[in-house]
Image (cartoon, rainbow, N blue to C red; front, side, top):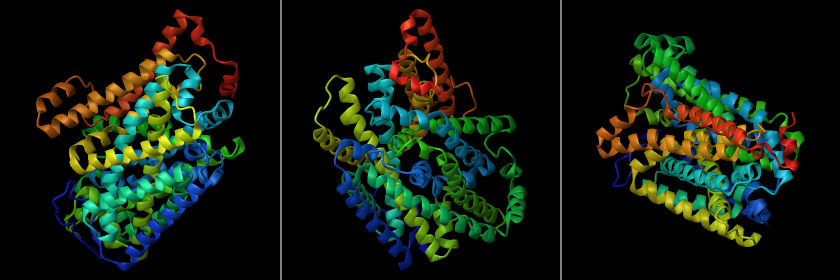
Length: 531
């Protein structure tokens, strides 16, 4: 049902194997057609920048919840998730067990406040909200810069995955998968904006939930049941089924588990493509049940990673199958080789939609940062709404082209950017947004310090070591890691989140002592702090 991905004279050669099944091709073509139809419909519904960026506050409970879950899960559940479970065993489950808690936490601390701030003031972006809270152009500008940088990272990684999925479904060369996928994404995003993205998210979420149940059942059957899977894994390495997995020794594994809990449970509240979704809700009452719906949906969809990763590793360790694939290919290989054509087509089509819809969310918030947030911070706002909408669409095209060039020319740079994405956003925005909208004593100086420290920490401990490894300057990597106080297995992204939160609180408290003005909150924002 699948064949190996041949080497071509283009970057990022290894990836998802190629399907040759007409049913899978039909699913992929149908999904692309539906995505474009949704884009055209979104274009017909879009009359203003508000419509383009936040759907005019028009979506209900189920759409909001499933959209929130799908932009976080995206293609990760199909490619990255099985890879982590296959490589590190139960260590990766700390992500999948804690990420649903992230939805609950995010809803509790931010949903009501983000929706309220959209009613109180005319906010369309995350930087709008941080400016309203802190009344500082520095905070607005740094927020816009952080969003733009993080979006390039996320978008490049998604486009890199998109070329593989296009090749897997349609059997086309990687270069045409990249260029064709980017063109479709650009047209879809420019036409429909966030309205199209939300409804594609909704469609993808339902598909992924249904497909995950089938994949998990196939995985259990393939591995001979959970008892047999566990026995095969334990025979090879007991750590594969231990509470903290295989990353480092016993103490290090515990630290890794805690760090991933912090990063994915707390860090979810700092992801702008998730928290700006609260602007879009039709009213306050529909927020009530969103958290459990999103959390349960994410947990169900994670069965793909859990089932495929563990069963494939167990069968390799038992000698039942040969390891002719890389860890990053575990999910695609399992779906293509060990499930039925309809399920494989469903999952691959859902992955295609996931990449498209998530990339659309990134494009929208990144384009808005360029066309709206940074110009306003510099004192050069675009005052005409239609002009702002067109500039946003132009920025959207620019980001797509930039990210496509990054993927085409530099596999290394994609790796660097991908390393900082989630942790970059978490460190920058959890203190500024979560603490800022829940604590009257939060200061603009604390926000500025947290944004700067959060970005710099990730650059120093993620970007520089990765760049040093790729360029062969190991001395630089060793120099940086020599001042990292934890074992290298402990993700620096989690530490940067804790550091930026500490800096935010400390600087805000100092600012309170220096001037009482820092404790004043505009009268119309008092509702944000009511329980």
